[in-house]
Image (tube, rainbow, N blue to C red):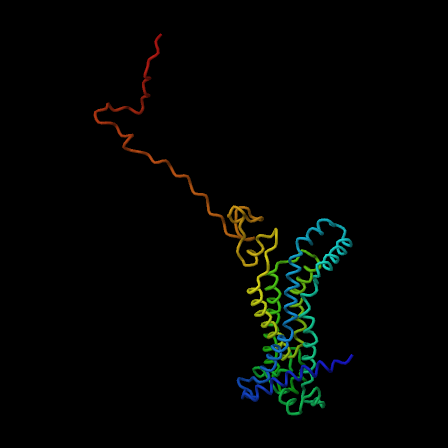
Length: 344
């Protein structure tokens, strides 16, 4: 199946934004070693696509809320069919079908952006001076030459961390500069990818469904770690796209979660407090003890409990113990005489 329609669509949006910034007066020449018109064209390519995909993002949030509301029923099924994995899966699929919930909907926006990512990757990869097909996908020869020599702090946008010496030579790039810029961008890409998943999990909590929980773990840890290796193969322009997309996602999720906070789950009174970073309180209003260290309160490694106050010694009235005026002094070494002497 030909993907030319994706390459043409990505190129059209990218070139329209570049033409707009050029018309506004953003210089196409390098300022601080950067061609800002092309950088802004990539950034607003993200903005355009995220606006188009916003209805899908809303569906993703609704699906996650539906999955969260089903967690008590999922837990009941797990207790009921404990040890019978096949029956459990069938019952859970029936539950999702009845309640019209889709556990994979949370990944849909990411899946829809994969073709866009691959399209931009292909378009930027062909930006090499020795490429004879300069007018593919709606490009003019002038636009092709301009994009080929565009850079971020003197590191060409088509270059990557793993560029060969021949590729760097054809782009007129310094290998050390490219590795530094690309390496820093890869680390930022990993960090922002992790934060986008962590932000959502902190607000909605971990799923009770093992399948859904596995997807959450993959999103939180698996994908960011995979970028440590695959990021070296991405052109700098593609990494800029990825980082911008992550930052847009963080802002969008923060707005949605603040405007429409997730409902508090039944039986999980401390979930909202846990997600906000504050320890939940028991029904009596006291902070619960740490399950690992009972003498502590708060989180897993919470604060030490305040030491018990030492008992105060009773106050002695010295005036009451003082001898009365005119009384005969008593020798403390001699025992007191009995009041009544027993009769023989």
